[in-house]
Length: 328
Image (cartoon, rainbow, N blue to C red):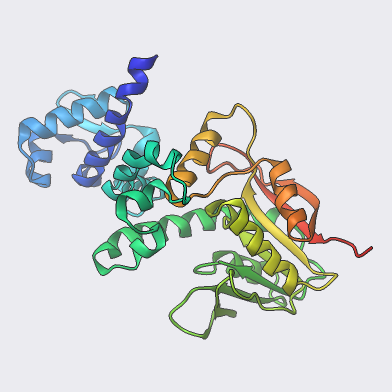
């Protein structure tokens, strides 16, 4: 077992090289390519591309029929450079992320809460993204988040009823995928999105986009507030600050929807995601009891938890409904 764990990185590194080579763009499960053809199309020496393809075949990414390689059925999406799986590989296996893992052991004893990513790059992830030379990597990140959000938004709409809600704001809502889905199904709801934009206020597709910082002030006056995949980016003290700002903006009748993975014991994929968030942002995945704890520290209480019946991170994604704690 230990040997397999030790060499497992080779699979990830080779998969990234395979995607970066652009070989998948010339392959599917119907039209195959010979090694010679791939070498010419990818401008890679024939011996090297053959060895890479042979390894991909052993991993069941490729299959070989006679002298041609084909993508296997589960890996067909790699032929699309903009697919979710391709984008995920390009982002997570990018050397900037890969190299951050080399500082994980150092981050375990870090006294000032710096993430492994920050220890390696000397700046936090979001500051790293602000540099022009990292623009393409940021685009991969934005595209990945948008694709995940699109999938989640459809499940969210099918899982909760917004009847009786006249206004909603998605805090940290990025490109507005959730708000657009809400507007499509509930055209009378006033939908706003707050995130850090390069403008003060903008209108698009019936959605109002507002520049803001959820660590500063969150606008008041909404029936519903939403935080989708935000809290796992932050340690408890910072997550509580966000929730406190939501609490301050909410009326006694407002509802706060938290859309997050709820961690469960003995689920290896969930534990892996938890580690990943620590390495990238000093963030964390949380058990239900931990959500209850940070809610209480912010003056909120959990009133309902609904399973989205969706797993993007290896554990269950949920809608956690919170309201203000009743006044005594």
